[in-house]
Image 1 (cartoon, rainbow, N blue to C red):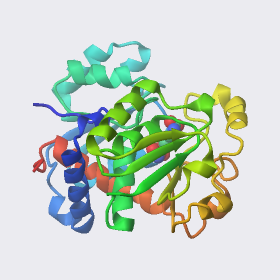
Image 2 (spheres, rainbow, N blue to C red):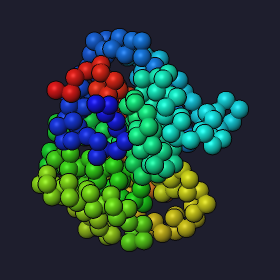
Image 3 (cartoon, rainbow, N blue to C red):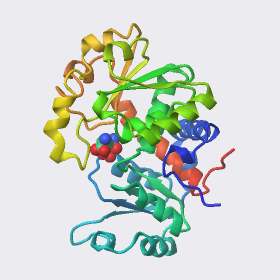
Image 4 (cartoon, helix red, strand yellow):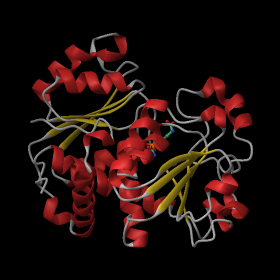
Length: 312
Ligand code: CP
Ligand code: NVA
């Protein structure tokens, strides 16, 4: 059966544990995996900008002995998808050429369509709804810093978005409590929240939404934030920034957790908006370790989905 990473709903808690264990091994002994994707080609389709995701996937595929094709959906060298070729036809054609598709796009329906009509693994490299590769790298970072994700409390402060959606799904799959702290008018997508709450109930962890940062951050092991204006929301930038006044992670906020908290950010960061420079560049920050872990976590995902490593 072809497996995908459309969102973290495709991965059970056991799958997440296996991914993190494999990522740890790949990071420790990269040479052992240097030809695991030999003869395999991976298409990477980007309909939105990227620094970390594109570079880490491209380098990661190279390090595994595979071939990557960096493709866009616009401009003179873009895919025909950008001119209206259907997702169905694209999926069928690409399945004849490559062994997997990594795609960053707007609608989650495009990811679902590629998975439905193609016969190869589809990896979500960010949509408006989810960013699962980011969340896996985040879990790897938390595990490295604390020795475990179990029993830890992560508080995401800012605009509920694709990154916080994936963190809400990551919590129950890793024994971690996740609180999304956001203004009442920027709450998480209700369907994703409902699913995360159900997963948390089943896993015995906590997922919650809290409007007041003072209440939310108490006891947090990790304070996490993301840009207040996601790709595709540029026209609402002024309105979003106004709504998020008071949600900047600064020294006072991180010191009020009552713990030796870490600061995390998926990047790119905007100092003075979602995070104060003194926190972003201060002793709490692990953002560059977190960015590096994109490489190791994604190599593990590629190995598992393309048959370069076993799931058990
Ligand atoms: N965090 C992240 O996905 O970064 P890029 O947009 O640079 O890929
Ligand atoms: N929420 C951000 C994440 C960027 C990595 C966006 O979608 O633009």
